[in-house]
Image 1: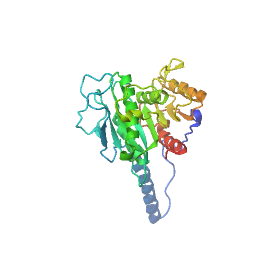
Image 2: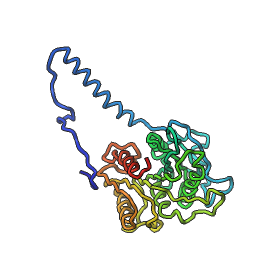
Image 3: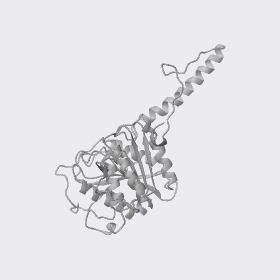
Image 4: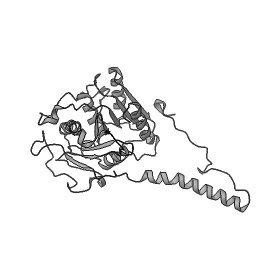
Length: 321
């Protein structure tokens, strides 16, 4: 049993990891058993193979520039965006420089009505963006659950205040365009990985502190997310205390934290943040697995591989799904 009640079991196997036994019976029965075993193997192996394939959203997505020309607040990277703006960003692993922050909106597959939506913030230590593993692959997974994903390309490197302004603007634009993008503006959350998790936590605790001067009608709308999902978040603490920019209060939105024991550099921050949420009376859940490391996205074979199902269950309990 892992910490926090996360249970994992193992099937009984022989020393080689294979089920033991022998074949007995007529040739026809042996053939039937062989075909049955083959069918079981196919049904077992194919989902594993499919799970290990890179996820790409089915739709190309709607590219949305965050800021009007010449009105980006704060500093920007002196280097051009990487990759070039005309490239297919769904297939790009990472980005080292972002001077023109934007969103790509990947719509949910839905029959009718506005969809819940999540602004996805890739990690990368505020030095780059793990855009595929923690961006477009996450978008494809969210789409499969009926959630519209908005992948945020926020400013890097070394521009935390610029990134904070970018995520504030992204949430406000999502609310402003909820009708056109077929979003439910009351089911609009954020999800962040590593440094992106810190960015989402900062928004969740400082949404009432504008990171820029208003420039248009969108900036009159709230940038408070309706819920927040933090997956192996980084930088949540300073030693044994909460990071000073994270001012948790009763207004902080409901939060799910996913982390694991073998991420010693950042797991302590999640524990401290969860304790602060508890003290403030914020609805939250902290799922702490035993193994997983850091930076896995959806690609883990450790205990933390269960996190997507746990997240889906939490979103269902919160009424998002």
